[in-house]
Length: 448
Image: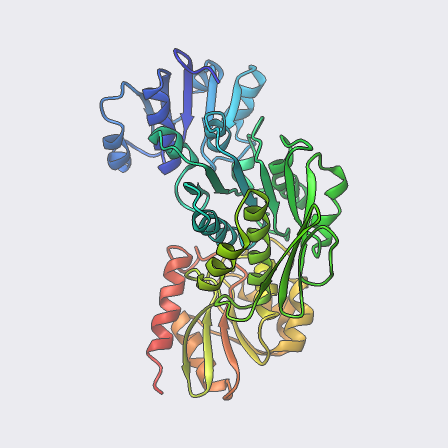
């Protein structure tokens, strides 16, 4: 990508936008940054870009900046149907995401991981697997560090592992991961997309630039994922926890089996610190990505055995009166809660928050079979009670603290209290981390 002397507009000045603007300015582009926030609200970001000769249009957007640019770089938070982006596209201006921009300047083999749930865990494990086999590895993307920061740093790496959200895939063009993984698909972000299929199509773009020389790691147990396998150009490498595979990675009788081009490696799951069916899938997907790009089985097994749960994803808090309390605040959609409910019996489920527009129907059989008590909080409580309330004993709570106290009163010894919301947190909390901390504090305040 030729950027020297080009007029480049960076839309959005969050961390990704700052990194893009800094890279582009230092690489010789004529950079304009636009953001609807005021100069006063962006003091820190502007300080990071001081002295780079960047032009700023803050507190507003100007259509001429969009239509007159040679290239527009869009932050993930800006929707694809923004009128000014449509104007730019109509004027023939190239529009790319930060992921696309960064990938044009990366030579190392790249692993890209997406899915509705499990992206962060799988990406983190994959990065650790490459490091355990001695590869200099960069881990970034939606997981925290923008991919463009790798390019900007000039760091020499041998492997790149990147978590990709649907938002980041909306403006990719030639993005081509050596290995791309799609973990699962369930309804999410319908407050952003006009239809479920639009969300699915955004996820599938992770494979768009691949060829037969690349690999597509797919969940063979997810019918929605698997139905797209015949449409992909890459070589399909499936993973499954329910069936044996001649080529791929699967779990049988407590042993993960990897089969590829006539080579087989086994990974006994006893001793794994990560538990739950969702984590078994995450581990298999991460192993597939790593082994396909040269990781050694012996170091990989030791690495997986030592890996512990990430914060706010099925994290054990404490046991009180024979009841285990688990915090799953990152479960912001229905598909994630399905995986959580499959991991326990005799559950008191605390759920609710800001509704994201998807159906709660996938929870029906699991709530009926495994949830003894359902405690609902937040804006979505009314809708969730209408769809799920008749299936089990259902209560309402006004606060997280009240929900935890109520759960402690009604859950018998041997049961599990699980906070797995199926909703975003923004109705009651700053983010999912604050929601998690409020739950943890309330559990730790229980007597016993």
